[in-house]
Structure formats: C-alpha cells, structure tokens
Image 1 (cartoon, rainbow, N blue to C red):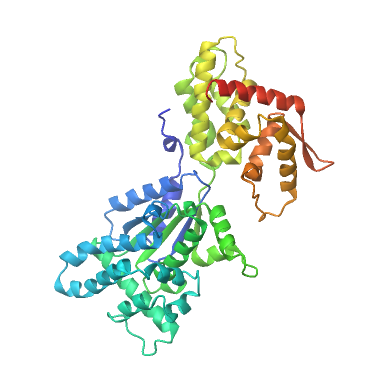
Image 2 (cartoon, rainbow, N blue to C red):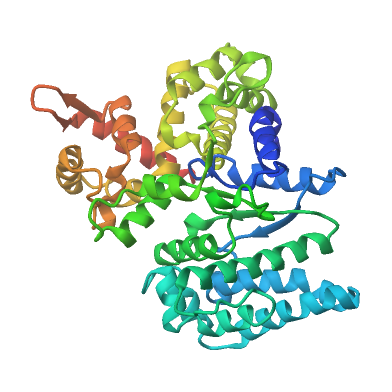
Length: 457
C-alpha cells in the first residue's frame, strides 16, 4: 500500500498553532502531546520545513534534537552540547574580531565540557538527580562550567556562595550562547524541537528534561527579557508522566501533571485518529478505509459489497483507542487488504458479508496490537484462567499499580478486553463485576487464529 495517510488528514490548524507559538515574541515551552504513532513527529517535520522556508524576520533558526537517536553516543545531554558546539563552530571561524572575542570563550566552554570527564556528573547534579540544581552548582560538581562561564563576561558574583547570583550568571551566558547561534544563521531566535524523549530510558528522559529546563529553556520570568529560544517537545504525555512518577514517587504528594504544568506554559494536543478532520466532512478512519478499499479491493463491488458502506462499517465498528496510532492503523489496513485480496480472489465461495469482514478486521487488530497475547495465551486453554484472573484483578487495581509479569502486561489495555468481548470470547457479568469466558466463542476464536497463522497473518 502506497497511499499517503497524511494526505487524507487535515491537521493544518495544529500546524498553524505551532507556527504561531514558534514565531511569537514571547518565548515559552510547548508540549506537543499525543499517543505514540499519532503523528507528532510528522507535525514537527512539517513545522521545521515551514520555518526553514519562511523568509520572515520572525522565523527562528531550527535546532532538532532527539535523545533517543543519540542514545548510542552515550549521555544524551552531552549530545545536546555537541549539537550546540556544531552550530557555533562556523561562527567562531568566520565572524569578525569583535564577535570572535565573545564567541570564542563560549566555544572553549563547550569544548572543555565535552572533553572533561566530570561533565556527565555535573549535568546529572544540575538536573536534580543527586542534589537540587542550585546546590549542586555551588557544591562542586558544576564548578568547572560555572567558572568558565563566570570568568568570560558573565558578571561574576562578588559572593560565590550566593547560589541565586551564580545560576543567574550562568543562564546569562547561556543566553549569549543561544543568541550567537541564532545571529550566525541570520535569525534573532532559536526554535528547539525535541522528539522521542518518551523512548529514552525513564531516568535519562527525566534527567534530560530537568537539565535542559534549568540551563537552556525559557522560564516564566524570561518572557519579558527576550530569551532567544522557544522549545517544542513532542511526547506521549502518559508515558512521560509514568517516567516522572517513577523517578519522584518518593516525594510526598508528587503529581506528574502539575510538574509538567510548571515547565510548559502551553500544551497542544494531537487528537487520536478518530478526531482528525478529513475531506468532505468524513471522519479520518472512514476516509482512510475508503481510500484503501477503492485502491486495492475493487473486486468487492463485483461480489455485491458496496465499498463506501463497508468503509463506514469498518470505521464505526473497528474503532478502538489503540487505533489512534496512525502506524498501527495503516498496518491493520495493509493486513486486511492482503488477507481479503489473497483469500477472496482465490476462493469465490468464501463468505463476503459485511459482518464477516468486520470480524476479520477485529481479529487482525488483535493480532497486530497484541502479539504477545496472540502467541503466548490465546492458543493454550490452560493459560486462559490465569489471563482472566489478571484481567479481573486489574479492574480493581489502582491506576499507578503496574503489572510486573510481562506475560500479562497487555491486560493494562482496555482495548484487549473490548476486542475479546466484541469477538464473543468474553462477556461481562455486571452482577459479579467481572469478565467470564465463553468456551464456544474461545474455540471459534482459536480456529480463526490458526487459519490466519497458516497463511502468514
């Protein structure tokens, strides 16, 4: 399948909101929030292209940073410093003497940091991982960076024990550094786009967020002072909140959402696929299903199936939260098309009713979204009692209690129970407030999975 999903989804309003924030005179930190696969990275790329093509004086110079992409190079915070060094290097080599006198010490600071062994520990301390950011700065792990910054035009504090003066001077020099990078590229401001933070290790993700916030991101008091950088972070907020809770759960009454509200003045939510507006007022899923069916399954029309009716049926009844992931939705459509083309073109006697096609689509959703369940639980009758016990126990667990056994992590998703109920494998007993197994439904389900397995689905 070669159709471009994004061509069928109208997200121009989201892009315009981001572009307005990126070119605003008031710097800030924006959280681009949405589930994995909802199109956040694509939106960042569109924004990046839009900013680079814009000739306006208000358009910023774009820095792209992915902590996950830099994982192989070691500490991602050091990778961010390398990014700044690489952006600043052409300036230090080509600028006039006046600018060079300002830029050269900054370049030396970055080179010294990247070459020094204590740098990683210094950044860890500043992030708050070992001590509070200010205290760590004063107590030593960050003294090397502080001395370099303070000795080069940063307005050295008369009393170095005054931690607020020290950190203010440090941020003043960082401001000079960011301004130099922007001006070197003919711009007045920078736009930092951070992607895939939620794919880094939990402790690394939190350290990166804390470190960059303390040093490089604008704070509330910087809105009037003209901080030269705006940041947009594309993250799965649910995952990031779990990371934060894991790192800070020992703090009394720690609340991840309140923590993020402190760091990000604005949140732009990428909605799940269902709510993406599509052409002619149709829902996104309907438009995508219709495009796929028309392109790959014209033979359905010859078998008496109206493609628009089938697309509407699939959009309405194969409709689960997990399919808000655009990549998964496309994979499900691809597998459905392959199944229907291979089986129904070669077997004219195979049932081609709307109900059967919807059921097969639901089976493929389960196969694609929950491979562990399909391989380790579904085929074995002896595993079903344990699965049901875990599923029913999960109904009464508190939200922050996680399943430790990886075999049952999939019971955290309400989509799985809903799919199994829609397929007639489980039914919910409201009197007992639990799910119970339907044996004949399970037997049919296992036969269907076995048939799919034989043809490679």
